[in-house]
Image 1: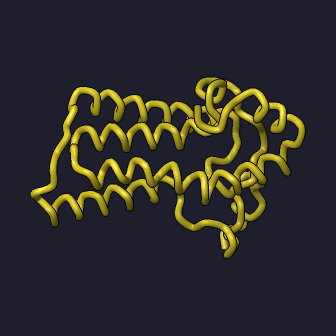
Image 2: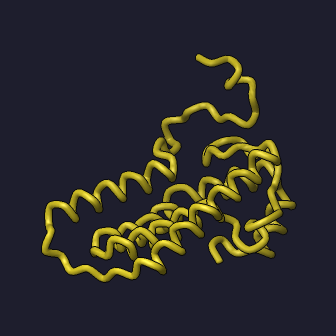
Length: 162
């Protein structure tokens, strides 16, 4: 056991009731499944918009990295089931409470437009649904418990997605 991690309040210890797959892993698994289906069923219809896809991919990745960097500067955890130490209110957090998930979703839509087959579009829909069902409620409970009224006030001002 890493004793440094055990003493660091920003790092949560694993709990069997908590999700084990982190959101970027979920997105990667969805992309892998989409690619496998795309390969297995080469006669699927394609609806490509490469320029829009590239713009959305870059915008999504940029938003995700920007939001993650703000967490790093604030010294709070990036781990969804970690112990939040402070509220980040700058940058994309002024418009959405989940810019990292929004960035991943936007990147998935961009990839779907680049590749153009149904499995990739389905992945772009499944990811935010998974986040809403599996990660976001848990994170919101953690933030509420750790940050109390400040987090409630933030939720009243800023939407979950957009």
